[in-house]
Length: 612
Image (cartoon, rainbow, N blue to C red; front, side, top):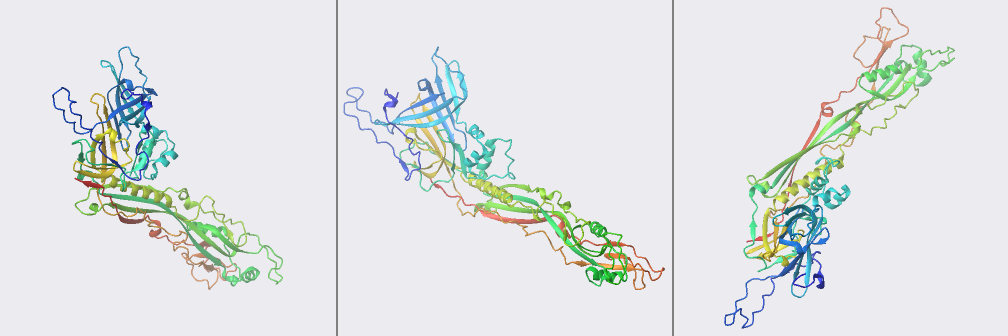
């Protein structure tokens, strides 16, 4: 019932301003009441009292608890408090007559609070709150059930799947900046995503989670003009220096493995072959034969040098033949694998650590002036642990010495990819981009600490929501910014219904640079050579047993042995061996590689209207 009339007998309109208005809704005071007729005084002969200053509205409230209308039980007052980024809270009391049944199972019961106002011609009903009972308290002497209800924002988010939270919040998120989401609070995860946006997450008056920007519209949704606010209710709370962060310094160390693959090519040919292939070279060697290396010696020498033979071509002694050289002399080969020549490639792999350090600074104009800086510092370290880096040094397969012929290549290990950086570029971009957005949001939030609040009759603020831009121009205060706090106080004892509105004013100025992630500092095309892949090394030959053999050089790479027919028994005998030396790896390619970048991003903050 409202003024002795059934509520449903009046037209109930939708929430004013629920949709985005094209033009601002200007809130004007109602028309003053008409002057009373002469003779309408309280007592005959007394002058008619002047009309009271100001204006008033008829109003009522409808409250349901667990789907049941409990409006008749309301006592004291109703208070609804909704602030951006926080759960909405409602408080009210229900009076029960002695002997009247008192509901005690109230936890988690649904609560709705509607406000109804009437201008004498039609009624408007709007939703102020939708939620659940959080804290019921029974006052036995007064027989009043005090109810505190919440819109259950945190638990609604907690019940959402990750994909739905991502769709709702729209913020950036990196596992390198935050903790892995598995097994953690979904509410914390949503807050992490929101920390990368200049926006808030809360529930509408209908209890539906939503997000909206902190930035004010160019055109406000509502304008409160002269004589619309409660006298002396305007309060301006200016930002304090200690709370206005104007410079954020980030330091991000990004570490990843660089996989090197260096190859050296070797060749050896017995000088007695006359550099000829096939039977011709064999016949030349046979005329003055000597000891020869075999395949196992090639592989052993390469391995001893710290290299893995990954490909080879063999010039082997021919098998037993009746007359290979056409001189009537048969050839009998009782030892397989002896070589007249060979060409092979030895390779080695190693992992080098690369660290890219990004020192990124975000600052407003004041944050770039020494002495005016209010600095916040933070950082993180990211380590890329790629599976290829485990076992990379031993991932090469050697050639099979049993196989004969040329162009013998070892099989490639399918577990590993090609050499190069395992930098995980998308991961780097996401981590740095997330840190930049968090820092920017921190600065923007710090520059909206100035607030302007005022009270108006609730009937004049029906459509104002936290997502709206509101302008006030009354009592020597002119401001326009996004609404950040709304409190409705409906008092049944005094009959007042007032709404306190707070807007958060952004102040700062300046221009902004795009928050672009810097390019990689140590990017290279590949790590297949790095200057270690060199032209083929032709190995020397030392053969003892002849007067022309000379002295044996133990440090000379290549093959050493002896002629089969020694010219003199007193001549030095050379050891039969094959040796190669791997090229040394420089410290530049082996020690940790470091790169560093410093960059400053300008952050501009819009100047919302504020005139006092």
